[in-house]
Amino acid sequence: MEVARKATKRALREAQREASRASGDTAAWRALALRAKAADDRDEQVRAWTRLAHLQAEGGAYLASLRSLARARALGADVARLRTGVWRQLGLASGSVVLSAALMAAAVPPLDLWPLGLVAVAPLYIFVRTMAPAQALAYGWVTGLLINLHGFGWGLTVMERFGHVDSLPAMGALLVLCAYQGVVFGIWTGVSALLARRARVPWLVVAPLVMALAEAVLPFLFPWSFGVMVWRAWPLLQVAELGGPGAVSALIVLVNLTLAEVWLARSRREAIGRPARVAAVVILGIVGLGLVRAGHVAWLRARAPHLQVGVLQPNFGIVSADDRKLHGQEYINLLRTKTDELGQRGAQLVVWPESAFPFLFDRQLEREFAGSNPWALRGSYRGTLLLGALTHQFGGADVYNSAVLVAPDGRIAGRYDKVRLMAFGEYVPLADRFPEWAGRVRKRMPDSSDIVPGKGAAVLESGPLRVAPMICYEDILPETGQDIADLDPRPNLLVTLANHTWFGDSLAPRLALALATLRSVELRRDLVRATSTGVSSIGDALGRVHVEGPLLDPPRDRAPKPALLDGDVALMEGFSLAPWGPPVFPYACALALAVVASKRRGSK
Image (cartoon, rainbow, N blue to C red; front, top):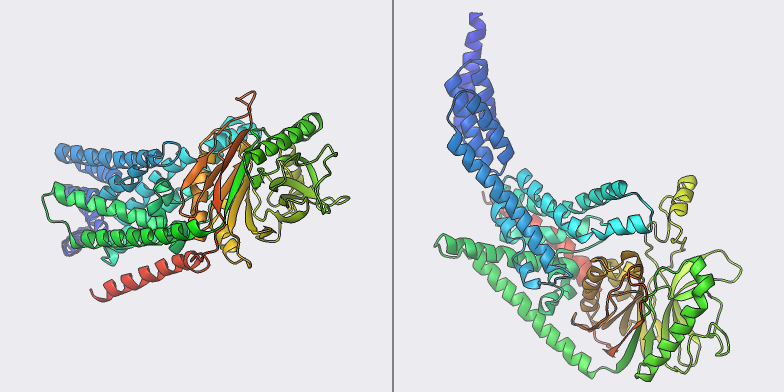
């Protein structure tokens, strides 16, 4: 018995020495508390648990700190004051998460209060910058979860209305999706905190690089980027030509953290630190160079040939097989009439949205239907027509989601088939391996089709026009921009044909417009977007949207009327950095992080 007591006392002394040597090591103080308990040393237990609570609170582990304080309190210690302080810190940290998420929600569509995007993550940063990496990751992930729940709330409507999924499973699926996509913010705060603590690299250096890298490496079901908050602030978007969405996100993170550091210095009545001063110079340099490039692009655009474009937003709902039988001819008549009307306004190119032609379009056609044919696409209009249609080869089973270009003389000048299909909307994943399950899914989603993917991006030509079509959500994918950048000949106009009827008048169509705008900056081409129910638009190569249509939800708007948009676009021939900059940018960020971290660690 005496031997055991001596061993226990010896273990306690060793734990005390270890805790003294590593005064900031939570593991050492936890071990000391447990050794003191084994030795029945109440005072040492109280000291160890209290010190551990302090360290946990400093690292942002507030809940763990409260548990440690509860153990000290159970031993009779007076920890009321410290406990109150920890609860206060927990409330402030949690409030910073909610505030950051709320500011981001206000910065993105539909409010588009973009100046808030410049300070949106500052409250979160102020708290997580001193936290341990695990805690910083947790707070970042919760922030990402909240903003994704705001951004993808429309998923419930889509699953319930078109997928015929019950509310509870739909909510569960949405929560899983948002939890996964929120990981980007967790990676951002967690890895930044780790590098700042272990490699002693300032957050202002690592955080922008980590955000850009995290967005690039984590695959999203519905891609979006942090930089979407400032899509209305076109001077801040010009860096997208250099590095795509990741470059915009990195810039906005740098702005947020710099403003936060300035505020912290002023609130403490201290001088602004060197990292913040250097960051401010970098920000001004990036934006200044972007404005110089924007001026050059505007000069090129003013001297390029111009074209009058008309966009026909028909505001139909989902055109089912039954609708085609009952109202298909009505739809064609309306499309033809409105196309003529846009032609009378001076439109030289008229664009119909995705699958606007209500019947299957024969891929073997070399000319459009004759004027006497009920399916004639045009009446008096004699300009160029770009239309969306489901196409097939007569007698074949394969169906494609296509954009068809009809030249002024009626010739079918070209066709592009959508490459990146929407899961469950245009195909059922793993249908070959699980055909029975796929069959059940198709029965639950009668409005969906089985679409064959196209072979790649294409340029459709008619006279001086070389258009690169994008269909549905392809225009929000950076990889689509890369595919177009590699085309030869290069296009002089970008056009999106989309059917956003699935999303109603939710946030999704507005977010799609915001995200798609970056393709025009990356490729330095004007962008025309024709959508079935909104938001259609006409924008330029600087990321400015000049014409914007309405957004409707046909099931609620019982008698929607077509919306007609017209505007001027430039057929630009200038170069862009899209083939080189955006693909390399994530690798450059990774290399920069590795170099900076290794140098810092080597200098310790």
